[in-house]
Amino acid sequence: MTEQTWARGRIALVTGATSGFGEAMARRLVAGGAKVIATGRRVDRLQALADELRTPDLLTRELDVRSPDSIDALLPGLPAGFQAIDVLYNNAGLALGLGKAHEASLDDWTTMIDTNVTGLVRITRAVLPGMVERNCGDVINLSSVAASYPYPGGNVYGATKAFVRQFSLNLRADLLGTKVRVTSIEPGMADTEFSLVRFAGDRERADNVYKGVHAMSADDVALVCESVLRLPAHINVNTLELMPVQQAFSPFAVDRGG
Image (spheres, rainbow, N blue to C red):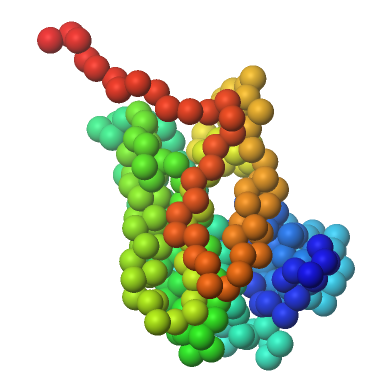
């Protein structure tokens, strides 16, 4: 299996393919010979990706995972050669704000839940029956180290990623007896648009998150996901947590003010 053929014969659906982990994974899958359905809300970015790669193996579709109608319309509208999806890369997600729970925006909380939890569940439920029927496939869900390690201001974002992790494990329980694999990928600091979105476009604040740190790139995370997909079919990676070397864990916080 060469670098150009490791994914040949596979059909992948990538959500959130307009930037970051999603775009990087779409590129790797196309380079590996897969047919890729790259989806997202920003049609101009999808078109730019298609214009750059110029391959019939890349199909772009507008998709808002928060919209049931958008999800319901996606699969029936796919050409015959893209219908037998056997890789679902659930990447669409976001963090909004870093305020304390009693000060945070309820609208931000709702948007994170609708995207990171409800949207992921809906698209998974749409694609999974076909994988089970064909008895093959990989579901890769993008969670976060925030699923396991709380931090101030991580409230609902961390909770949504904990859901993604546990949902992935429960899928594994339900899929026992099939050849469908499920993996929760849980990255730490990665220099993408993540912080720019979290801080509502404040570039200086976003850049400060990664200042002095050799953070992971989107392609670093995509490389790890590629390694999961390359494993022999009888091996399932349940959860995979990754961080840059310069990131670790803090001591417990203690309030000694009485």
